[in-house]
Image (cartoon, rainbow, N blue to C red):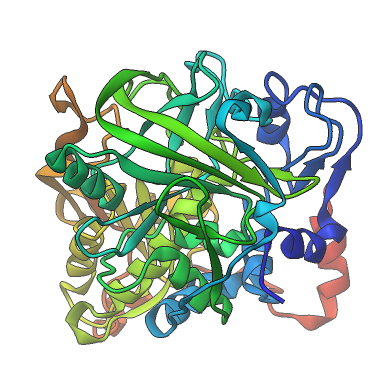
Length: 468
């Protein structure tokens, strides 16, 4: 059986909060999702009979471990890094699939009939932030996937969208050069691993991100032809939106509360998406990704980033002992924390330079710490910076670098070009001296409270740690 959104929801049902009270997805779901501490499904959507909505599936390492079928949340980054280095799936074309059970074509097309929420106060409208965008290179035929934002307009058959200047955008520019409309589809509601890998930003000259996700899951992905455009989409998606992007059409887009938790960043004239068809499963589940604080929005991007950098940083000096990599949601993806053991002088700085010059534009601050620092605990990381870092020699600013277009703390190159910002990056070495400097390194060892590691007080430890 293929891995689908439904199979994943079934596997985590023991953690799922099922809400049967009536909830308006356009005005109430945003805050409810933002406040949730775990996965939830809404079964009674006001104005959208027959639909369910689910979110907060992989917001933490527990949910991420479940997506990869792991028992330990500490295995997530190394496991994904290993699978990314060794696994590829492939597409298998099928003639039909569950996503074709209901069709809205021609005059029946109504994007407003989908329970697409407004995420935040001040948004330009209702926003789809959970659709895997699918385009195809007109020259090579290789697909690309990403999750981008799409804003509903007053016209139920048109939308506007924003994409960063990467692979989808490169496809779009090729169609603009040809003065031809670009086929584009949004696939909503897949197994979370497909969503995660759709946010991978590396090179892929002979495969696409959906096939990458299939390899991680140990399967091939069944694809089906669209009804109205020349494109292939996942047969087991919950919803597929088909359409064309005409090369010259522009309309206002934004503002939108992004992963930065700011509403500003890239609003302006944007391409127009003419919807040519919508298909979905019977009794469909709308996969929502709330784009605010501590939601699925951040780890969907940071998970493939963490795994990619885990492999990349281990190649520093041929063999650097990288223990774990974390891009914390509380830093809106702009910070990377590297847990490592440095054997030689200069190894930490070179590792930090590699982190700041990697394939993603997000990383603006890179921090290196030792194995005794909990990189998932902000207090522990700040302690390491405060107590193990000499800013005069262990903090370094790199000017004149390209940064993420949604990072509004960095100036835009041109006001009419929303995909380019240039500014500085910061590297912080908060590690002990390298292992070859044994005596110096020992001075930075943390003291242990008396009684630590005494097995006879384990029961009492549970008692005193319990919150009252």
